[in-house]
Every structure is written in structure tokens, then in C-alpha cells.
Figure (cartoon, one colour):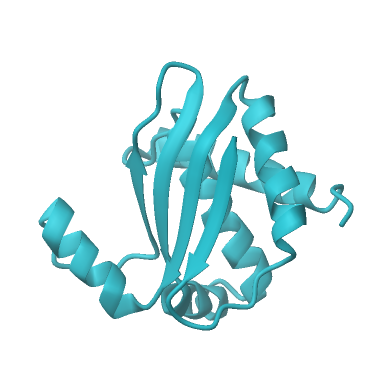
Length: 141
């Protein structure tokens, strides 16, 4: 099992050890196991290029998740725009850390099968994100 984090720009994240324990706990709560999960923290421009190149979307976004899952094993790459997370934190009147946790969980939840295109799916996703954030607070460093 491998969970990796990389950043093309300076990013303040909670401890990697705590994040890994938390991600494993989220996966287990969804009856999944992480096989290989890579988080990449990048700029708006980098994520826009990925969005244009791979998904043919010409829009800024906070996260793109590439799903390579194998049955109940989670395999994926997640790209997160740190700049978009910071802006969204201000918009939603929350802290950068909480918004970052929400987006990190959001990517993993997609890999667990959650969708977010329809309103009812968005409600389920938001509920699962909130549960994940509460779970984070119970994980010790």
C-alpha cells in the first residue's frame, strides 16, 4: 500500500502521517483498501492544463481525480489546486486546512464510488465529506 504526496508549489498540509492514517480510515469506512494513491498539490494553471489536456474542459477547478481502481482496491491520482482551495476557503468562510481536508476527502470519495453531478449525489458527497472531516479530528499524530 502506498499513499504519496507531492507539491509543485509550497503547500501547508497537516502531517503526512496523520493524513495517511485518515485516508486509510476513510477507505476502510467505505469497505475499501488503498493500494496506490497519489496526491499532487499544484497551481491553478497546472490544473487548468490537466483539465484541458485530459478532460477537454476549459475551466479552473479545485480537484481532478483519475480513477484506476481495481475491484475493491483504490488506485488513483488526485490533483488539487492549492490556489483554488485557498479561494474556496474564503468564499465558504472556512479555514484553508478544513477546505483542503474537504477536497482531499472528496477525491478519495470519488474513488470509493461517490458521484457529484446530480443534486442528490452532491448531498451524499457533502455528507460523506463532513463525516470524513469529523473523522480527521479523531486521528492522533
